[in-house]
Length: 408
Ligand SMILES: *Cc1c(COP(=O)(O)O)cnc(C)c1O
View 1 (cartoon, helix red, strand yellow):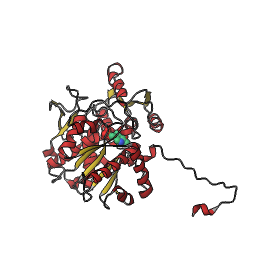
View 2: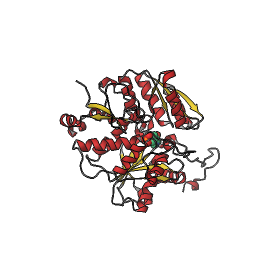
View 3: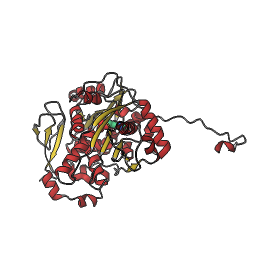
View 4: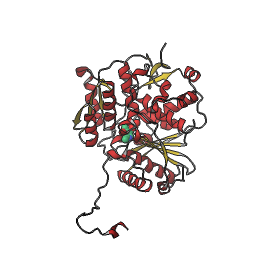
């Protein structure tokens, strides 16, 4: 008997079934595969109390909802349940009521971003299948998470990133044991090389949504949020959307929990937030399209959401539509201004992608898309420490008389 509740995999566009227990990439239709579970059997075997009693690290408490069969293949670098932090003084500046705007701070995970969730699962499954070489295109955080978990699993890792990826990410990837290459292009250019290398090199392509398990890891964001809120959900979720794994994964989590009867009532509205310099999903959403063509000349300070084309575009747009949500683009200037304001007012340093959700939330309140009485969760997807910050000029000379009036 299988140690998981997985029944099969399913093409997200045609519904065609694929067998579990085998290595899979995209479906024959070239679209993501989704893992399906026997939710009835899962609901009969596992209770909310069992989850509450789990002493597994972080998201591994949701192991019954995940596809890893053998416990020894669950790789861990000390995952944590990430905190929900209500905005305090900065809430007023956003036009929010006290306690209604809550940051889910994913920067506390191993390698400092929520990419740890998806890559931990993908690498655990790679170990289960005995894969020996993984390759990934990245804007920084996914590569760092893959490098770390692959090293932990003893699997070879190759990472390709745009040449202008922040140096701190590139160095982190290298130090964590992966071979990292800078490419004079964007993440989709890196992705093409990874895809083309499958034959000649024999590596396994672990790109966003091009294998089925990163989404299962990101699904734990939804499970964790539900459990933290007492198996209830907020009114609206703002998610900084690149490839969209997290938004799709959370929506999948909510659907599974609902089918199991663990949550009921209204589902949260899902809001896909992008940067004005790279907003393919917002553009498609506004045009009423299901697919989002390549965005030319993509640029934004929020590197994690600089994704000009997404293989799961239609899954993002469907989740937004089914949830009654919306998609919104925000400017880089507003992102940096909000990042600085929230750090200054609340002592909470968001990454630019996380700050983008605060900008979208403020705009949504102003436009009446979200009411101030509603609870909004803003995803801060990475630690703010990996990004450039304003310089400091104040200095003291220890050899001359200190003018203490400067501290007044
Ligand atoms: C990857 C990433 C995103 C986008 O996440 P997806 O689930 O791929 O859309 C947002 N912010 C940061 C910091 C990231 O690393």
